[in-house]
Length: 281
Ligand code: AMP
Image (tube, rainbow, N blue to C red; front, side, top):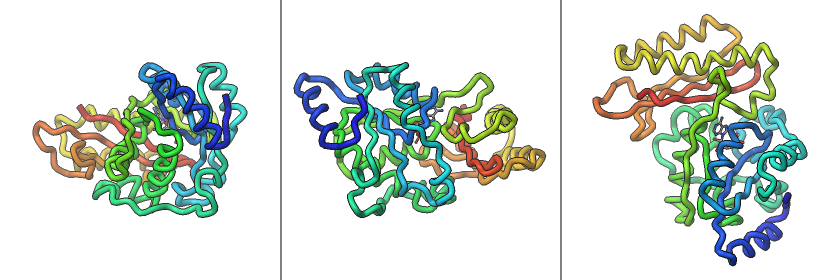
């Protein structure tokens, strides 16, 4: 079922809620792939009804060309969902339905961790993410909402968002889904040609290298090695490689004994910006 008005969506969900059904929300920007599907399947294991929103949120893009070139194909997406989970409620609002006539972000105090990595290199990105999700949670009022660890910093932002807004929704994190060569599935992969898809495996290779080196090398040594790895692949432009302490998601050069660390990468392959991360334990 495809719905583009919030009123119709709420009417449909009201009926389900009256029957005691629980609602799961999987927010997406479309161009659906196996990664999204893993979230949807997890949502079905936890909730009676699943709403997948497809909305390319203009306020989370700091780069107009990235927004314009973001892959969009709602009819293909709805076919994809029909094939895999035909009972899914697909919410495909227009921009006005979400933002009325004011397409702007709200300020949020997510904490220091948003000053690094995605927050540092994509100014205003997380405020855009917070602004759209706050609205989607208000419209859908889900019991649980599902987010991928692929966007690990975003997952933490969303947890912080519901703490700030007090919205009554449980935020669930789901592991990153990868192809057989380790490449994290992403809508942006649709913009890569076959040769680039192969080259893109370097990102997973770099993260795996960092993980293998972590117990025996300093963070600075690992960072240098990864930078060199990308320098030897000139089709890439490494934006950042950071190792963070998982407790605060702030990049660090020190290994705290007993604490968990995670590595994060953002790199351009041609014009396409790819991100990924991996636990180092
Ligand atoms: P997007 O459409 O890229 O905004 O992603 C929508 C949701 O799917 C976000 O919570 C992402 O973290 C999640 N997601 C995207 N790619 C993957 C993946 N490869 N594995 C797991 N979750 C993913």
